[in-house]
Length: 298
Image 1 (tube, rainbow, N blue to C red):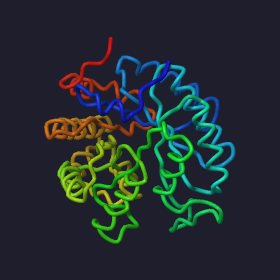
Image 2 (cartoon, rainbow, N blue to C red):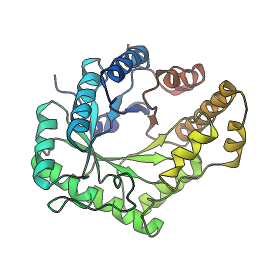
Image 3 (cartoon, rainbow, N blue to C red):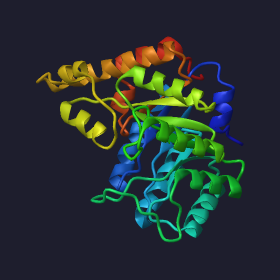
């Protein structure tokens, strides 16, 4: 059976899409937990899922194992993340061929973050320096692969300006990328401004907003610590509740309100960074929100 690409799903959608992002566990016990979480999430029927990529050795193998687990349990299509980190061009070509041979036809092409403890990204001597280069490589090897790329509503941390950031985004799309997933944000106006500016810059691809639920001030600080995303004072205040469950409820409700506003404003779908947590996806508040605009397949 040939699964649709994300390009096909977005082009033929009758309602906004729902996608979930996972990360590969680090050991067999973690895979057992992930399998149980996926089983619990079956009733949600995401339109597609994405899963992150470990750049080296055993981490890379864990990513392939996680992609396989998601597909075997029916969470398809799978979008495999791929980064330029620590890889030569030949190594990247091998990984692209391997992804294609596994049956996956969707890749999230990313430059990748600098290694832990380093402030700047340095490509492998024989590697690629930009996500646009990776997109071009994927398309040259397997034109049938659909490529997603990252977008930054409040600009990439390394961008000199919003205009410079949009220029780089357009380069990725001009190289052949098919859709954009945004980095997390907590103000919906940041997304709508970003989409408006992207359209003005000649970017026509679908732009999916990415959201992350936060349950505490510490989790919020970690979420925005690797980006230029900003946190509304009202959200910070709501998360200060000393009762953990009340703080978690406030974080979920904030995300639900964001989703309602994004769908009302015409977003083509919602992408959730769920941190492998079935509890988030099955929360009654989120379930009621999804039911307002989405009819999962039977």
